Image (cartoon, rainbow over all chains, first blue to last red; front, side):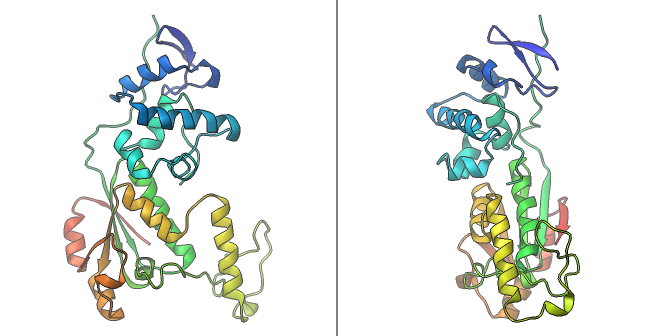
Length: 104
Length: 172
């Protein structure tokens, strides 16, 4: 697996560029990752990213869009507005987590 | 200096389009179309669903909460988590459909997958389009009033074919 430099820090990523080690992520890295996929982070984005980070800690897997709505309290419609076209994958990428596994 | 690796989330303006025709009203056959529609929307694919024949029940307010699953005639059905089959001759027994429906609903809920009306809410929130079949509406004597409010219209098969020009198509 490649090691790349993001925001001045060496991080492990998979072949697509998703971070593979939970503890290597920080908020500065998130900002750079977001910028790379043309997203400017606002408070609304941070609310989701922080939820994903916390939820991963307890669940051991990345929350799906459905879970971000039902547990995280951010409606699917807003997720699409904040992370256009592919919210689940974009949210996971910026939060330094693997792509969600669930189908729904 | 290490190279940047940025995931390819595809171009913002993909013209990929998916048309799904839902023609079944059994609980188990309602889900494949919804799961695929939801997945396609999550990948940024424009998605249109056409509800026809028994699939019409999925968008009919008085019926959408009461889709059922019957093991009768379904030889692939086995007891959950086991390879054991119940003999087909027992399937039409009174109460069997209710039990099977309850069991299926529970397995679906255990996976955090919503019930059909909730699922359609999510699909519409994700930008999906719901269309109702003209012939099915006429056969069932139903109008827009009896359908979910987010159904965009009752249209003919040829209208749907026309609006899904160039789309990939799934018939379920």
